[in-house]
Image: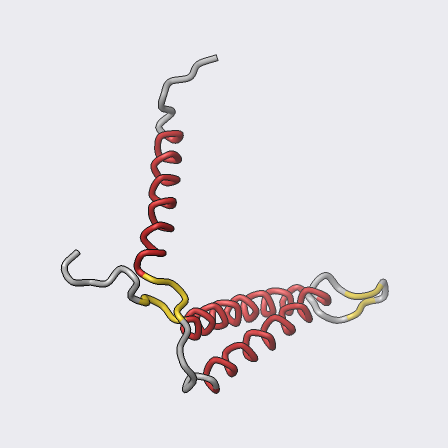
Length: 114
């Protein structure tokens, strides 16, 4: 390799936590909106279809906000390595092999006829 250390940190834990928190917050928003549209109130027979899922999405959104605020407030601390270049290379080797197997299965190779 051209002078690149294979143990170089590519991602830090705080960055990964922030990205996951943002994705979960977006998911909570979409789920909350959809369940609000479905109905989050009570009718004559009890809670409507979106009542419980709506409040679960509110809890998910609150937990995501907590994670995001935690990342922003502790940003000054020492960054921990989430993944190094060597670790990511090993993970991507597994994904590449799995992709190749799926491509061969989709192409129906080898021809296996009953």
